[in-house]
Image 1 (cartoon, rainbow, N blue to C red):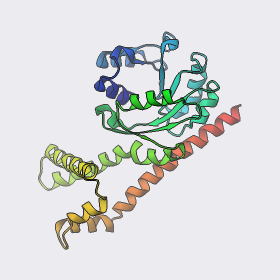
Image 2: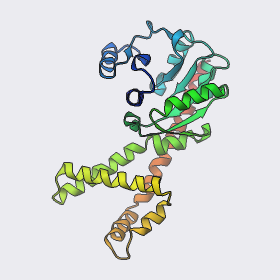
Image 3: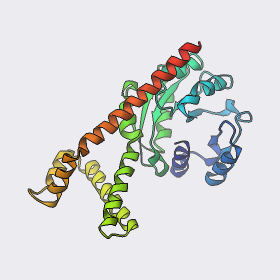
Image 4: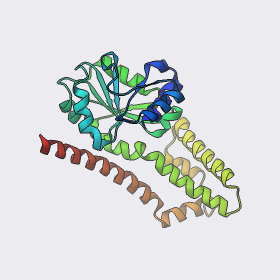
Length: 267
């Protein structure tokens, strides 16, 4: 996800590449790769001039959040803006781990940020002034569309948009397989399926029509589309999608509870 965000910001050209700085725990080879590929700064945390940074983006694994925040606290100032991409980690947890009044924005982009087509959520913590909120949204717009939501809606957003691309890629695997089994070239099947999904998505976005209306418009009684939809219903296709979203959202909530429980135990 971190690389996807870097790629999106570089692609958008809103920020000079040299003003984007990336670090990690200890993998200097990876930092060199990112620096070479995107023209950004790859530096070790110890050498990073944190006092010169306006916005910090936290994109480590949630299990590493507590230690990372404890280390970060010693290097940052209370006014510096924090954007957190940590699934399941609340703004209140981050605020408590850093300075009083630290402005924290919880964000959830998806991997489509790499091409500027992410659906990204932003939920503001308790101490985010309007000026910082505008900076956060402007930065996230480099990745695609931004949706400002309440933090208690972040888990379901994660289930829909954060994990959503994986559902579509999984669907594409089966579209590709079905086409190949019927004699289409594998790559051609992939192109046809991807264009079909892209066109359907654009129809939703550009016409503003409801999904069920668009579906009904192309479903003739006893036709090919009706046969396909009947097969999806009989195999539980719709219910499977709903369950995938629900389970991903529940997992996001579980991660949050586990980390906050562990932190409170250690305190």
